[in-house]
Amino acid sequence: MKRLTPIDTAFLLMEKRQQPLHVGALILCTPPPGAPPDFANQLAERLRHCTTAASPFNRRLTGGGAIKFWSEDEDFDIAHHFVHLALPKPGRIRELLAMVSRVHSQHLDRAYPLWRAYLIEGLEDGRIALYFKIHHSLVDGIAGIRLMMKSMSIDVEDSLLMPAPWGVRTRKTQHAALPIPTPGAGTFSALTRLAGSGYKSVPAVVRQLRQTLSDSRNKHPEAITSLQAPRCILNQKVSGSRRFAAQSYSTPRVKAIAKAFNATANDVVLALCGSALRRYLMELNELPDRPLIALVPVSTRHDDSESGNEIAFALASLATDVVDPADRLRAVKASMDYTKERFRQMTPSQVLAYSAALITPGALAWLTGLDRKYTIANTVISHVPGPRRPLYWQGCKLDGIYPASLVLDDFALNITLISRHDFIDFGIIACRKNLPRVQKLLGYIEEAIVELETTLAPEVIEVPKKKRA
Image (cartoon, rainbow, N blue to C red; front, side):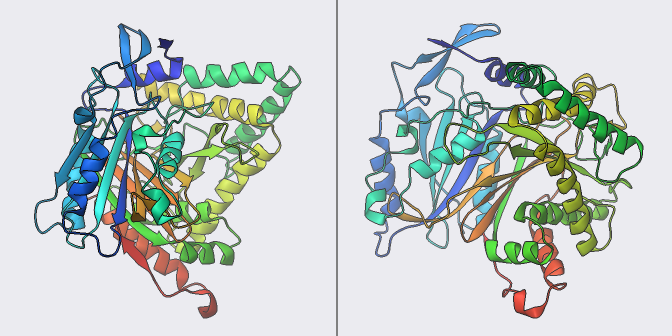
């Protein structure tokens, strides 16, 4: 048996009836040319025979109270974990996303290893889907994306020999973080690692904190602290019902905009989300006067190894108070540039400590509920790097990977996206009760792309292109 880490335990203790803490991903694939009508049935039968689960997919919770252990499940039941479903006619993307919304809302049974996989057929265009969900205490989001890619291949024939996702051995990233940093596990871990790096590291962190707080007091627009995000309908207690929306947007289009504004693709993505949220909240007459703030996970790792990610959290303005789309992008870029400049002057351990210390006041207010005017942030926006080449899964061409992340009390909306070589796949998950018709954000993101493209010279504009999930 292996005892759970404090962060893994925190995920289990934070879980409530209306707040399941699993993450998921919807994979869309096109069957190979000439596939028989019963291709999905054949694939389902093949996957049912994958009855060996690699670690950690064979781990089951044992123990009582707050002291829990992982033990190997000696009676692994593939029939519980793998489900074959068919969409109701006409099998539109609308029906698929509605199905994923319902399945994502359901808790995982703690009597079994905490994951399930759903093979879904019946799409009107002939594609098939795989929805996979797993508890965040078992695998974090970064490891989950790696897991999906490790079960795929760049070669069609080789992909048929790859194991099922639950047969791929994976591990959590070395320094996994809670989706919302808390003064408990996150701050303690960061300060412990800072202490291990030597006493000379502390002044650098203090110096950067003083600079940020001083800039904030002097009304520097890019210096954001964790007690200035205005509360709005995004920051309410959540219900147990979820709404999942997904769509892909052309990577070259986003990169063209980024190049024209001397920005990064992530800057553009944040600005697009800010534009979409501005319009969405304006239509509901719920747009705050102050700009919305996003909590943005940032990797502090300086190499490309797979030994794990070190995640800090940046606070970024979405500039939802700015009317002009181009000015909004410039404001978002300036906000991220300010944080990057702070980060550049510190080591990864110092960045983690700086991030934790900066966010702790807002996290305490969030946990205690004492401050009802401001909140730590309005939403979480995560940008995860994905495959850079076309991939195949079980003989099928990968068309998209759409993340379905966590929704928490006071964080009723989460936007996670995966950048591939040709498309950026957006996955939006929200509390269905608090945020009506949240799928409209997808159309507003496309409109925001077109608005920014109109500011560019004609020679850098690609023919508008988007792809439904």
